[in-house]
Image 1: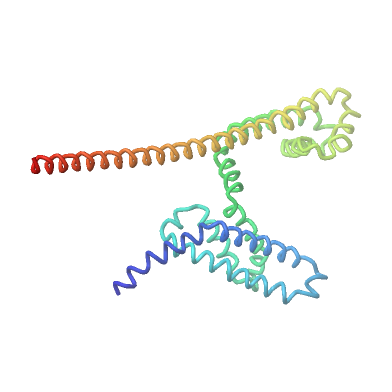
Image 2: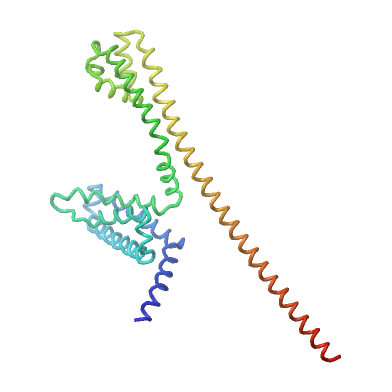
Length: 283
């Protein structure tokens, strides 16, 4: 019993070293990319007619490997695994893959492609980008509020200006907001919106051009600015943490060297005292 208790921490430590090793991470990344390829091939009727059973066999084998990898991580890190959001994400993705896909739950079979999203938890650079985007959400809230106010004010104005001449586009506030959203995306804005409006209202460009400039360029750049600032802040925080860790390691090494030198000096003093005592005895 005691042997088993002593062996478990050793096995966990070895499992943790294996999971955190670069080779293991690269192997998991390769399996995820292989799974992405097989899932994409399954969308082709021609490929499925020729290699369907093989692809399904590969998919099942990959699911077993992913489950084994997840079990190894849970064994290695125990409670720490469930405190890691990325661990919960991986557990949810693999759990969905094991859900029954027959009958009314057949839609769950298509959710197997979510395994590809595990690249977000495996590749550190992708984790950093997602972390930066999540950190930018509070700053984006103010921009979303600004955009909402702009769409509301512009929607009311567009309904009053063009509602009678273009009821299919600006007949109600909801129609106007939807049309303005299409205008913001620049999808068919000239032929579908601006030219028909200018046939009835020659000065319509005085409304549409400022709206396009503000919504498409200014607001989009605000979003990009918030995300870039978040990425920069995250990078600076990580670099600061690395610098502090390096400084702590340097201080610890210096402290250890100082302690060693003090120990050597004390041993030299003791040796000198012993030599002096021996000389005194001989004299």
